[in-house]
Length: 175
Image 1 (cartoon, one colour):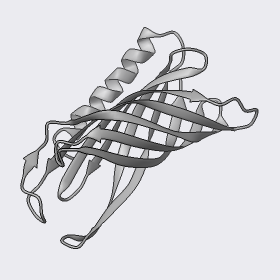
Image 2 (cartoon, one colour; image 1 turned 120 degrees about the vertical axis):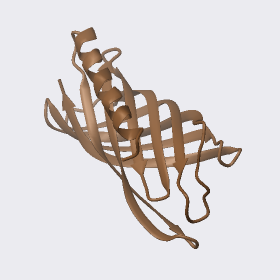
Image 3 (spheres, helix red, strand yellow; image 1 turned 180 degrees about the vertical axis):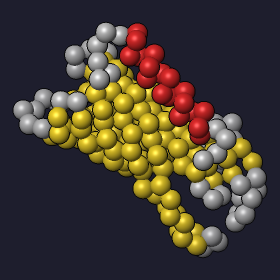
Image 4 (spheres, helix red, strand yellow; image 1 turned 60 degrees about the horizontal axis):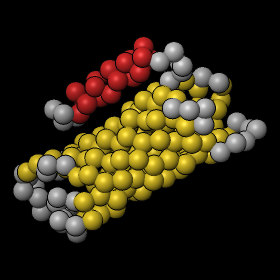
């Protein structure tokens, strides 16, 4: 973990507690993994995984607002992604609940020496994301979530618009 990742995770957990006390309605905490890796002719194959922590609160009966942190700590590149968005579920009468989501995207990258990167930090990339997924509700208080998001953002590193696909799997705890 980088110096920034732990404070960001703590801040996200604090927001979860604030949401729980500020609203009498339920909230949810989700956490999980994003498998990842890269193949480069310069650096070879690098397999890593990102971890995410999210907090969601009801906005209406059909919509939830979510703040999510996704952190990748690699050998040469650390990425922290914050996403603030909304999610709505499609009506079903089974344990599988498909959903659509969208919102704002912000990411920071810390490059470490080695390979083709000089050591540097970027100022952050702003953009939007859209996606969807499915929750499998094992109980009313616990679900397994499979989630996909496509982010479009203005990259400081490349100087243009870039896209990023996040595919995650994790657990959802509802309170």
